Amino acid sequence: MSETPWNETGDPEGRSEERPETRPEDELEAGQAEERQEFRAGEKAHVNNSEPAEDVQPETWQRTQPPAAFENPPPAAEDVETSIAAPNAEPPLFQSWSQPEIHPPARIPHLGHVCLLMVFATFGLVGAILLTRAALNVHLFGVSNINQATTDIHYALGNMALVYLITFGVCLIFFPLVWHKGFFAGLQWRGATALRLRYRLFGAACACFVLAMVDEFLLPGPANAPIDQLFKTSHEAWLLFAFGVTFAPFFEEIAYRGFLLPALCTAWDWAIEQSTGKPARTLDKNGHPQWSLFAMTGASIATSIPFAMMHAEQTAHALGPFLLLISVSLILCWTRLATRSLAASVLVHSCYNFLLFFLMLLGTGGFKHMEKM
Image (cartoon, rainbow, N blue to C red; front, top):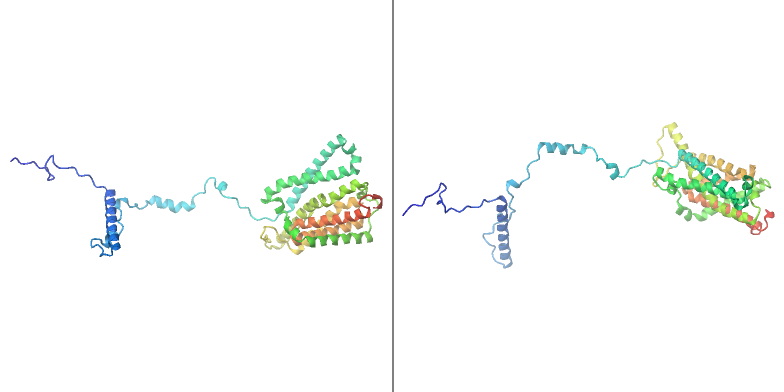
């Protein structure tokens, strides 16, 4: 017999089979398969109330650890340095776009906002004059010159309404951008508060009406005041009635009790804080300023004087009506500050004007006998 040649590994040449290389993944899968088979054998023995299989050892129930080749390597030194320096890294390029901007609390409105309101009112006045000129050119309501327009009820009320509306429209657009809140929210409108206190507010309007009756008895105004010249016909009286209980109280309160009064209160407290070194007063839970009693008293008086002067021309600068207007304005200021509601002072002002016009309505038989005024 001839000898079969053997190679260096001990296998006959040409007859040795190539064994596949064993990978770590295959070893892991084989170990897991063996675990599953042993687990099923133990579970079956438990169900049959038989002795557990002797070949199922607790060690085989443990999870087979993966080979060392699959473990996470320790972080490199440069990675550690990068993770430590991460908190001090620069913010993203567009971080201001993704995060809302936080605005510091501010006491609004202040005197700067009052100055802006005066500028907007100037724009409104210019716009009203231009529109009035255009109306005169087409002889609207049969009026063709300025002299006739000053005594015509349509032009007198229309000019005031245009000034109010133009100014109000600009304010609605501009101030919310500056205050970062709604226009009426910045002025503390709070209509729900006025509605809840409506009976008390009507009582305040009645108090103003009683003051007007006492003032008329003690210090009566002139017989032919400029305001009386507008009550020529029943039509004109009804127009004044409607304007006096809607447009006039609404826009006048926005200007005087909405802007000027809180701005003077804030300026008063700010001046005291600067002179004494006291800290600024905190805002309330709604973000509105809180004022001292001294500031509210002084600001109310300072607000009432220009309010009375605005109406002085209508009453021929008479002393009695002037003092009455200051007294009424003080009541309106107290209402605004006590309730923290601009709508409350608007309601009192409107009801007060309504009572005055209602008295004239009764005295003239429904505005049919205007000579009785």
